[in-house]
Figure (cartoon, rainbow, N blue to C red):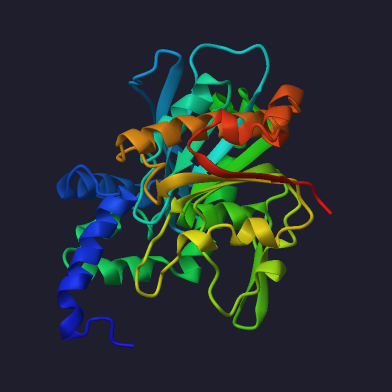
Length: 355
């Protein structure tokens, strides 16, 4: 199929520009992005597998401490930057850990509002940046952005992201500066869009590639937050893909959560595909009225998206408390039929038990 047919040139340009705004993933400047990526790439020459460049950064929330860390996975020749959010000060006991995977073209700081909220609520949140599908996409221009997006959304990058999560958990639990504060028995994965795909893989989803079954689940992960997941390719069976998941999941999307990108399209009514296909796990689905694909991203600040973010903070925190801390009150909030009335921006709320 020729996606760049001359008669479709203007619509495609509008599509590419719209996508940049839709994802909210444009960096503050191309020069800043390139400087950061060059610094991170230079770390590939620095010694054995270890954590480097860990330092505190200012937080807009006095209740939250924030850190930048860059890990080097020497075995894969891969730099894995992360932004860490944790409660400021000490804690009487180790805290649950949430690992977050950004969407296509995003970064470790693209969803900081969620990270800060979870930290203020007593969780440690580690937001990763995935080389090959991060903000570097936006260094392309014009129609080249579409090619960059399609080149980034590959099975190879999906697999690399899942390994990034496993590696990051290893590093957190091995670093005495972080491990002492983390409860290794209470770990969750979360992600948006392509990052939701990452979260599903880490949660236990499987797929067929070149005739072989591929699975990348991490048994240390006990819960998953799935924000606006992409649909599966037509050659993949959702039941086969998602039935292996055995941990609780929370799925959030919107009635206008569309990404009409040629070759990468997922429409709003396809976002519940994983939720509907699962049978062996407790799961929850929230669909926000008029919610768009960029609603969870920090750069989307319109009135509706701000309401949706606040609701998502409430729901994700309740889910984490119910799933990781066995909080009965949080579980009741999620299971209650009054949830839709309590959150007026929610068009549909559904809770399903395993069967």
